[in-house]
Image (cartoon, rainbow, N blue to C red; front, side, top):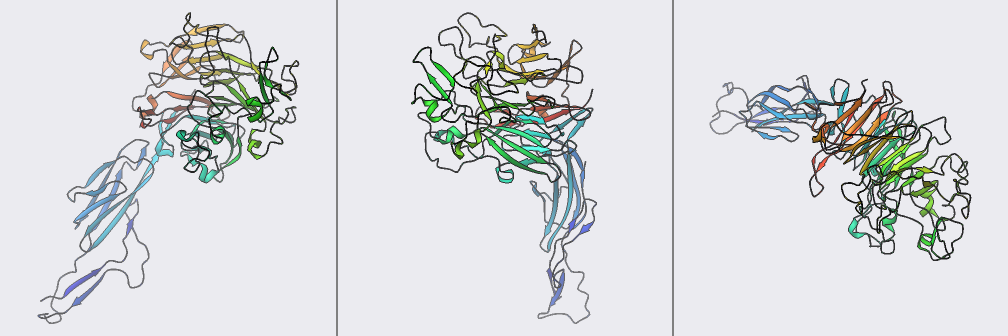
Length: 590
């Protein structure tokens, strides 16, 4: 009888992308060892027992192509001998031994490991598939393969060219020239955690720990600086008397600093868009009544006066003043679910703003330098005609620093706001720092039909953008476009094809040539209005998200060449689950 061979496999070799074997160091007695075990009938020494059995061999493992765009597939191919089972990780599992190739769709840069196994051991080889953003002409597209989530809500650049993406579960950031985004949340950047489950909004202490609210908006500011906005409850009717305290603090915004050299992000402060107690008072008697900022309240038990005003939590749009020649530089305006607009004011103390948060403890420290809040209009002329709970999606700062906004029903601008914050254009108020307010006349751009203001004839304004000459473009989800000229005259522009349903989700005036970038709300995709004509961006061969509606279009005018960024929204089913992920597009052409 022949000697019995015993095979001991110590270390598994790993193969590089080039197909060369690399191995990990093993203990001195590791390796492949053959030993003879004599037994009865063992032939005399010197008898040829043949070669020892071995683990499988892999002579090649390749990816074609090895460099892919986001969403592109690649073919893994190999040649092996002697295996009883073959597997590829990650996400391929067992492969028939008769197979020598398989198609995969990596979600990001991925190293695939082929493992061939038999009764004597396992041999492995690795190949890396590198993900790149898709580049076609002057366009670049970024999806999950470049580090983003599927839940894309907003995109913006700071004055240093860094790019910030509001991605729901996190804030995603990259330097302008980088291909991939870095992910930041509460765990690695200290972002605020003040959300909990909506069904527990009356519970004094929720049953689960607080977590970070969804990141749904962002605006770049000075180089390396940005402000991000959080989601909050989608509850239109507010009753502070039944809510617990914690929902009154949910949402808001964070100011963050990004260090591109180290690839780190730090929260500098939280912004609570609320007014502390002894700031807002409302009374109806004595006549004529009052609702605003005061130093004493005729009704000392008034709810706003005692508890503070805390109704501005869900930040859906953010814009920053980038005019370094203006004393308003660095002011940040925010639009909210409550159909209102609020501001985080830069250098507020030097400009004369009274610090209403002083003396109210740490709970109110995050409200420092915050002014809240103003409605474009609260009510109409019809009985019960209220515009309080529209969305503040549309917000833009004019070249002279004047903020414009819409609550979906009416559009106007903020008055009483400027470098001097001591009087705020209301010298007859009970004290200084009394109020900003939205100017008149309020623009009902698509006039309501008689006795019916909440039908499809509502303005449904979703976006607005100023050109450098003061021209204001306004986009509606149901009515198309409005152009307000610098002289105040209004003109209307419909989309060129009835199939587009005159639905506009986002607009941005391009400072390079005053053309208008248009996000298509119902149809999805992008158009450009230039030289009196519409140009439709062809999405053939592009990532699927390029045909989604853009939630936001923002211009990086500080980079050379300037870049236009598009935040393409995800598609969701009735339960809110994402069925087709969003992404970011960037255009750097003329």
